[in-house]
Amino acid sequence: MRAIMLERLVYRSEATHKLGSLHLFNLLVQCRKRNSELGITGHLLYTEEIFVQCIEGPPAAVEALWQSIQRDDRHHNIELLSRGPETERRFGDWSMAFSSYAHFNKYGIPGFFPVDEEGMSEAAARCAGLTDALV
Image (tube, rainbow, N blue to C red):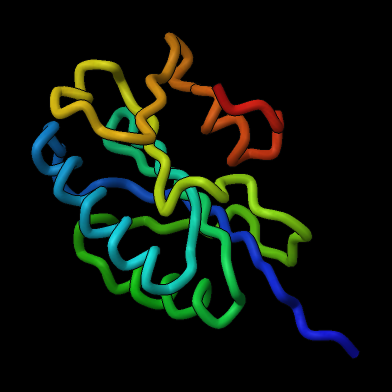
């Protein structure tokens, strides 16, 4: 039997405190550094104090990050939405793409994809498996 080479995990959680632009920028810097070290790519959506995150990478790295996420006191009410093997990455170019309201991008964050009125972006749709296009 062949080992799973790539796994994707998607979860939803609530922020413990309302986050501003600087907090989100610092969070992304931390996430991107750790994800790069673990071989993880993915996407983080933040709207109305709700996080939805898609992480993808080697199963052991995804599991290690998932355990860490569950202990992180920056959020609570963590709900696993999906988890399973995948054949290819949806976010291969990003250790953590990011979507939120345009006003959160005060610092010119690379990999930032603003959400529309419904709180969705192309990157968020890709995370959800709704599209393969990322503009």
